[in-house]
Length: 70
Ligand code: SF4
Image (cartoon, rainbow, N blue to C red; front, side):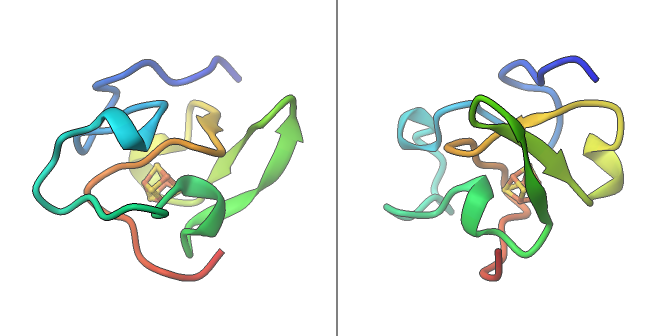
């Protein structure tokens, strides 16, 4: 799968710390999100959310649907 680009969906960014989104909180990232499906390679992995079914997301990425889990 291709790697997601900033803005792919749901305000996604590859580096959550740069998002500037009102819902973003320090430490929130794809790798500790309930939708994270595990690393595939090099810090990129799967996301179970349907909006990201066609891409890999960055372990340090973030989108506005982040929920604790991971
Ligand atoms: Fe990352 Fe979670 Fe958003 Fe998927 S739902 S892109 S794992 S923050």
